[in-house]
Length: 437
Ligand SMILES: Cc1cc2nc3c(=O)[nH]c(=O)nc-3n(C[C@H](O)[C@H](O)[C@H](O)COP(=O)(O)OP(=O)(O)OC[C@H]3O[C@@H](n4cnc5c(N)ncnc54)[C@H](O)[C@@H]3O)c2cc1C
Image 1 (spheres, protein in one colour):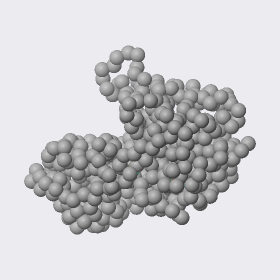
Image 2 (tube, rainbow, N blue to C red):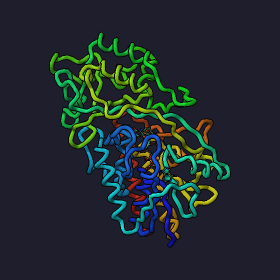
Image 3 (tube, rainbow, N blue to C red):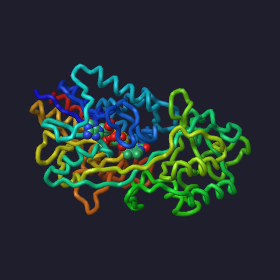
Image 4 (cartoon, helix red, strand yellow):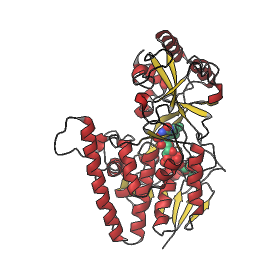
């Protein structure tokens, strides 16, 4: 059997390589780091998380939680490494990004069927291949992709939030707590604001200078990752119902719920770094220091990384991709990850999982099983090959699943029923897979 060339050792590329190799298929995994870095990547390790260290919710009444449960049933490497690198984050799965990347890198290096090539790819590789080069695909390869008949490139802008040093925080002002006492009850560091502090911060934020990337337009920003200053520009109180919402938090010093709260989430296992939750931004770095230092507790904060904003490229996939992320003109070539129009870390990994698993079936001459829109994995896969007037990236959410036949008014109950239905189908899919192997 021919080796599969996987391009890009990000979340999708590593998951795809793992799924192929675990099914006995040889893989040659190409990664351009550390020879070349995209504007957002910094470390030579694989599966680098370029912004938040959260892989989102884990409970089943949330679509991200259901996606994880589905991926667990398919032996997802990214999920397993995520759980091993876990740091406290209430009901969410957040990771120490360096430990996480090291675990994934080791799994790739140690697998006897995976060969690693540290090279920048500039041409479409010969089939069989999986292209998983992400939203910041290197320009040479982008041009080669655009030459595929029918292919066109779309883009939007994505942002990363700042990280601060814990030692530089004023712990007399900051308190540890999780919203509604979830997780260990004190997983986040919280910076409480009274109304005057919030108003002063708000005024400074909306007036601060931004570093607009070339051609930046508000409408191109992905709604799930809005820059904090854009959100603020929608109204004085918008942040109080978004990333700065105080619900479920009580300041132990006053015994009251603050007017607004900035939450900091643990970034590494040692607990020395914290990231500012929901503070992805395109403010100039000097402005970030000035404005964010107005937040109580951050007055002397040391920023180890400032927020940045980047162009995020994806394909007009409905024109060129077919079932299981296969290129319509050559199904032995697949695309995977954010470049296909799924949005998010786990969503990218899940598309790599399906691309790898289904290509392995094809190479073995077996029928490719497919998942329906009753599962989050299947609904995301269907999204990228379904034509629409305005094709946009999609993250895990219950709205993309086929609705239940019966009407259940209670949202929590409805979501749990959707989850049960999905996990039953996942078991059937797994059985089909086992029978075909
Ligand atoms: C700035 C920014 C912030 C984001 N923040 C979040 C967030 O907070 N939460 C979230 O869920 N999602 C976020 N995303 C979206 C998305 O989840 C991530 O981009 C995710 O890493 C995508 O996974 P991937 O495997 O598709 O690509 P990547 O993880 O980017 O992996 C692609 C890999 O391919 C390599 N590569 C690229 N071109 C070549 C080439 N020509 N030859 C060889 N190797 C190449 C790259 O070096 C990289 O290692 C963000 C995206 C951006 C751009």
